[in-house]
Length: 302
Image (cartoon, rainbow, N blue to C red; front, top):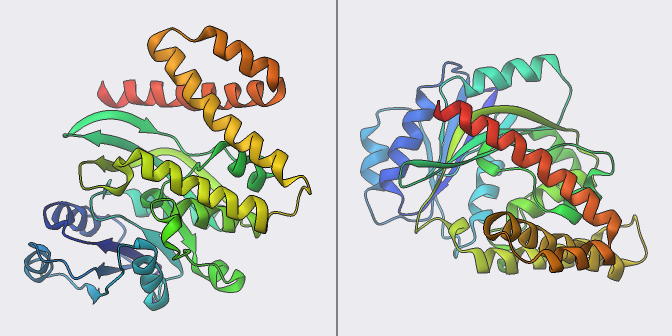
């Protein structure tokens, strides 16, 4: 029984998959199995996997464009104590699993997320720092959005099995199925741990599902509708919670637009007047996140 099961869904990402698997097999910590769930790729994927000459569990699936189905197949056949998710266009630093293994030995948690470098056209565009963790974390995730990245996350398999948690395979949640998954873990009292170390690279390109902003925003709204009106039990006023969640997302774009273009100050004053508490909370959260990301980005580039 390996300590980690690395689950890699892929479809026609042969070039990226080669770099992805190279970063896996270069890990300094070696107690892992690799599971590649291939959505019947018709590019160079087959040659990449055959020529690698490494032990890989290679399964094929017709997932109808729903990556959650591929991840769930990986979870089902995984033998490891911990599940490490990795998209086929992302890579890991060589000591990632070793660092995470040491954290698991020292601390008690069910899910860990580390930091990532964002790259586009092989250039660093940002540094993503996960978290932070807060009390009433399920509610905070609903209000402010996803604070984790799938390729930077490991989850205790026993916890998922005990709580009966898998990725939701409904098409309307596609591209935000990971957000749904993390909300489920938070709602069922999973212990989150955020490691503020950059241990991987997340690549944005034309084929990546996360590059389609409009479809991602629509998918996120569907996730919110489901959890706010069908799952959460911490408030009876679901409509007010919905309004606050949508407000925080509109506020995010208004703040980022203000920082970028130095305009719309009147709009921000209106936001503050309508919801001063949420405005202050979200502004503090955004400042925390962007400050950490700025200094880490500066450090990495230097």
